[in-house]
Length: 328
Ligand code: PCA
Image (cartoon, rainbow, N blue to C red; front, side, top):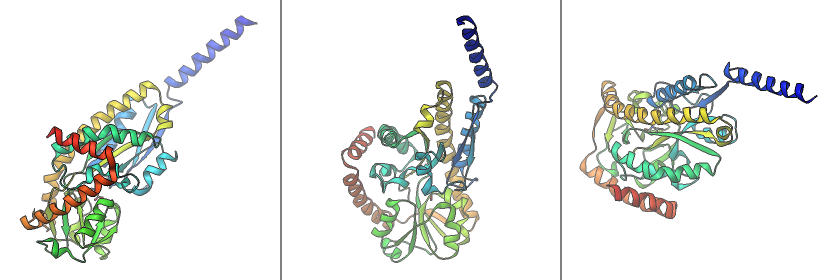
């Protein structure tokens, strides 16, 4: 009796392996992304998806869904945590109302260049990885948006000129910036801003040249002031149960693709900065540095926001800032 049973087990194992190798057990991972298909983050995410699909020999194929088409930006993290989708991309600082640490990259004038953004990420990454892991999320990679500047419908030369303007915000730091400059914050996803500006729901925002260019904001707004206030990051996360159920071989491929995507995404972000400023100009906008007065008034507001953030983020936030300043 024993010998035939063993033979059967061996045969079954062989069949299972053969099924795996032919890709019958292949999985498809839907990956929601909040920003438009034309945006560099979305292009980069698409290449990451192709890298994983190719690298795992089709055992895991990732399909991206940009433009908030599967889940809106604000719903993506929860959808992954609850297992509605295995993977997705979101603006990290979009969660700072949940935990101030997520807003480390939106502290005004802390890290204002790509080099500083990379240093800040290096020191913040272990903490953010841990905070996400406690929420059943595995961090894969993060890519910065280009430096943040101010968009307005009308010319503005000082903070006093901003009083009463309806200001589109994308996280709690940008809503706070509106309050401290006397503007009226209204929270709107990037996917909806063209309409918001066209209908007068908002007449200003802080964002990159990239988002203004993607959303063709020159149809409603006329001024972009380069402020280089901060460089917020998008990040890609996987549900940790899904991750732990993924073979070590596939995990290694995904990690490799993620490392490549962080590098290529950052490179694209740099390249895109000048390109989109020119695009805004071609659309008819005035693009240039903010006045000295405006910059110095915004820097004062930045000091207030830095101390508010440090208070909210506690010892771990302070440790990130200290480690970053020590690298400079
Ligand atoms: N674009 C995104 C976040 C930062 C940026 O440059 C947005 O405006 O929503």
